[in-house]
Structure formats: C-alpha cells, structure tokens
Image (cartoon, rainbow, N blue to C red; front, side, top):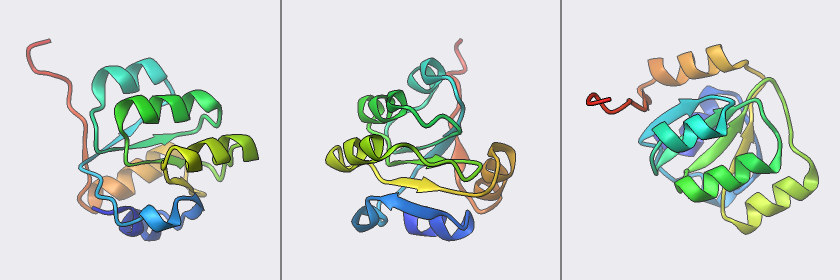
Length: 119
C-alpha cells in the first residue's frame, strides 16, 4: 500500500514529503516506544505514533521507515518537520487515534510487523 492510499484512508494531512507519497509501505507499526519500533519493525514500515518529538525522526531514519503518521491530529514543531524533510521522511497527521488508525489500515490490507517466532 502506498502513502497516497494511506493518506486517503486516514484522511491525513501531509506535513512534508508530498513528492514521496508513491512509497510503498510493506508493514505498519503503531507504538509510542522507540525501543520497540527499533526492535520489532523493519525497513519499509510505516510508523504510527502519538509522539511528536525529534526521536521519532531519528528512529525513522535508523529503520529506513517509509514515513510517519502522527495520530490524534498531532503536529510536530516546524524544526522537526524540517528535519524530516531534509531526511526524506514523509510526515502525515491524521485526526484518528491510534487504535482506529491501525484498524483502518489493517482492514485495508496493510499488515503489521511480527515478532520473530523463535523468541
């Protein structure tokens, strides 16, 4: 599913990276713990969070995430949006809260990340 589809499903506003909305998200990961994102989400994942600090951008960079969706209508500060823009990380903001956001994406075909079954 590409970010343009995700934007429509979530009725999201694009905060930056509009020219990157053709990127494909293979999986989605909704969480507010950066350590869990790093531990369980791989590249080509869409990050879904209510956190609006710069750690989210750093985490997205390290993971090679396709983009970040901020839930609950949250918007990060302009400096954080500029950092994401410079790092080619699309940012979206949806009015939906985390549970509904993840549910909508899942019912429209976006799969979640899975923990390694050997753990």
